[in-house]
Image (cartoon, rainbow, N blue to C red; front, side, top):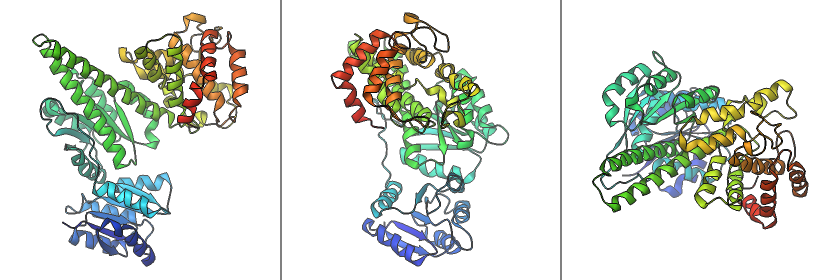
Length: 487
């Protein structure tokens, strides 16, 4: 069957250019010069993909997108916006209208073909396979916007998921009572009629029957201040609208994989009393996979907090591997050193709770702003909760700003009263912060950084940890990490 792409643009030259860019894909090209013609051709010809310019005479691209999504026979056709308008507000409006992709001009032919191919021939993340065949996984979605629900209806079947649509939180809660035994994941919007997303999640996490069902919240940039509370009440992850279809599929697949691993773990634990040593090895293998899935979740949450701080793109990665190498140098075994490393990625997770105007302020903070900034340590510990898996991460988040001489915060701990993992990460964090550019300073020369570490040993930093770190600098270990994850 021939794949059809409907190109809509009021510029004849742009229509021709887009058709030429897509010609190597061997698709049938259909052209429309305005929104009205696009809606008509979409309804009659049912293309596999529609591209829309936003700025068109008559009805613009966003309105056209909304009209297409309201028609029963065209509501699931994926729509790609191709435009020169590059601002968050317009992207959000396009997404809410039902667009699945947003491409900003200018772009290369290869880039356009790659984005089109990702929609027409999506890569399907590998499902976790147990010893038995894995059934289609079921996802309950609470979303009151029809156009966004249509996006979910398009995306979820690509990763072998059945959608259970609910128009608001109350309907979702009622549905959950009957469907929970066969549900694998919940995706919920925040703002909905009758019962909003926060109320819905609070009820879900208040009922032990639903403890094992992961929850992803769909939120806008303006709602990100609520994320801290959502994480505290039991949300596993969140995704900010507008999102790419690859990001959505990857996050959903990650949590479904964790869900499937936990189900298999429970089954194996139940059978443990009757099975032999071979089965016990399987249990250890599954446990390791669950741990790896938790590390993946740590990394995604670390990136979420890191994304608020615009000057630290690779900061968490560098600190992770500095800390792991430093722990090894200080005598930790491989597993314990690795734990310090991946736990260090959460050292600044509390910055989710810090307003952007303080976090990214160019120049020095006021005394009042510093009071707020310092709360990122205790907020980080709260976000990580009390689960044993996050014990080291919680210590690091809470105490990585303590000073060896007892003048740090939040508890003014002194010397060896500061947990060793926090002392390790503090040295790694200080080194990387001084070597990196920030909104309030330029990067320091490494010789000056080393001089500062030596000067701070015994006051700010643990002298033994500093000495071990400097040995890693001298033998080239630190340089290799910096080369791998540059600023």
